[in-house]
Length: 393
Image 1: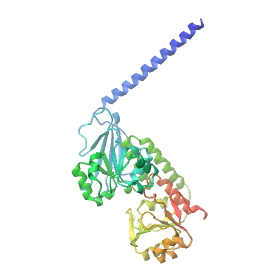
Image 2 (image 1 turned 60 degrees about the vertical axis):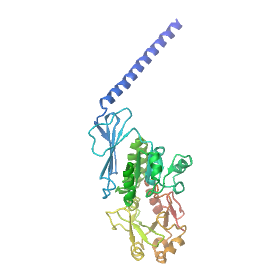
Image 3 (image 1 turned 120 degrees about the vertical axis):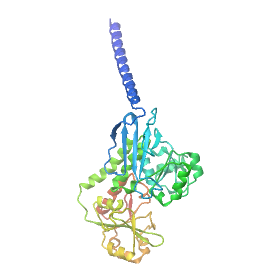
Image 4 (image 1 turned 60 degrees about the horizontal axis):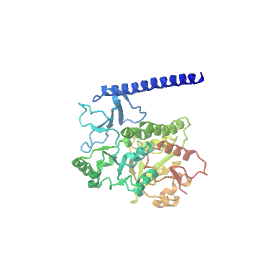
């Protein structure tokens, strides 16, 4: 009797297992049928959610297609068109007809790219896309990202020469699916022209034109879409946005900050008020001392030392950009550039901080950098080193 009951139970379990298996197979077949319905067609499904990034979008279509659109801010249309469209065609699906003119089409995730921008590499690395990069234009010893250095040591990354004069023969042989350059390529139109001549497809990263610093971080989502790593990129972004969200709840520090560097030839440059570094200071709760300087421009502005002193003499803090000009290791090194610097309030108070070498190489931790700037202004005098800032003594 007991054996019969056990046999009955076994039969019931087997029956249910068969039903579930059939149901599962049915769903799989239904999904396949759904995908075949959209094969070769672009039927809009939804767009990627973005909070601050304005210069790219990702639209998702039924059947797994996705279209990445990049708005190019550069005025030189001989180097790049005003808009770049990239269609990713999923495995097993065909390319739709009647695509917008000049649409770049790829099958499946891109696995062989050349990236000539260290911030872009940092974004892709943070999203788990480093293995999709095979070629770079910065040599091993210039990197401060441990994963990138390891990739070199493991022979997974190859240096192909300076971005202005890469090894074209090697690049052609390596056959990268896509080259991602910074907008600095516009200063080397001959390189862009050579790429066109050789049939090498490239795009220009526009993250440096984003108005909000977190917009730069959000570009991780754009590049993750090339590699099917959108979820990881969303997590990268949200972790950095959390720093800024928390700081937005705090009171302003009331402290003023000057950001500058001096070149080896003695020229002094400050960040424009429209630059993302100036906005990082503001998001950190500080007041950028040059808040009226070129409010509509990113990047830097040359300034005479006397003019700089007149504007920055009462700034509470100084952030010196170590990687862009001289590389002081002590306060005396900074003062040696020009004796007038010794009379700055921040110098007299010992509130001069220097960026770490990797500060401008990475974009995936901008929220953490903003948090460091806040700590610089709010920590007690015993704190002399943060993740991205070091106090000069």
